[in-house]
Image 1 (tube, rainbow, N blue to C red):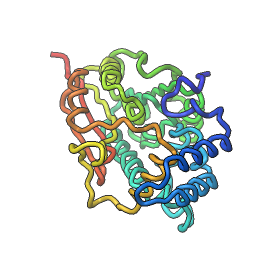
Image 2 (image 1 turned 120 degrees about the vertical axis):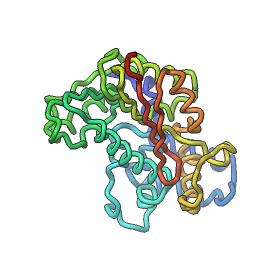
Image 3 (image 1 turned 45 degrees about the vertical axis):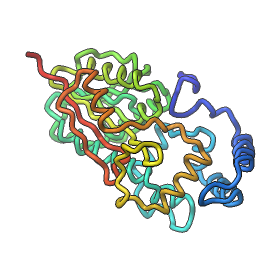
Length: 306
């Protein structure tokens, strides 16, 4: 079983009790003082509200999302949580949440279109593997699906979802580091979401893309994603301000940056991502933006043998 310290998205802080984490955050808020748009009292009020619902507590302790919570966020049905609470705002209003959910839908559309008879597809890291397990395989009963993740709990969640979808006989799991994934030249499609956004080292991200390239057959496809930088961080930010609720964005900054100090803060532009993929060997690179242009999907191909 993977130790929490090996996971870059979540888990390294999981042994810290919630009360201890709350005390540390309160101290930090009080020491820093008022911030634009929020007094110390308002920040402490938001902290208290976050501690009242399950996702809020998980974020406060872990500062990132695990497989289960990522799946719950992307498959959330609007209207499930009653309006008027901070939990409702987090699930239905925050621009990052909306972009993440839209990205998930784009992934499913792109992956569904890539299905072929006898197709071999892998998700790295797979998490609960919803982007593959929730596809329609009625016309492709001979598909083979591979889930690779360093988190044993994620693999267990994916196995449970595969069973629910009657796909257990088609899915094979491997508990291993994404940068050391095997299956050289065997796959038609590799899909990957949520790992590069936690990795600030550009060289390591390019190396990850090379691993995906090596896993694919000639002519195979990669479906991935990345977070773009906000305007406050980069003048090259592609964010579409007209598609973003600015009030919700301000709340998001308070919650995720100021209070939680979320770990998913490795931002890259379309140009940077295209360059990294090209360095890894990919071609035919195509971007599909979410409405806010916060969490684009990128599709790239490994060339056929000449």
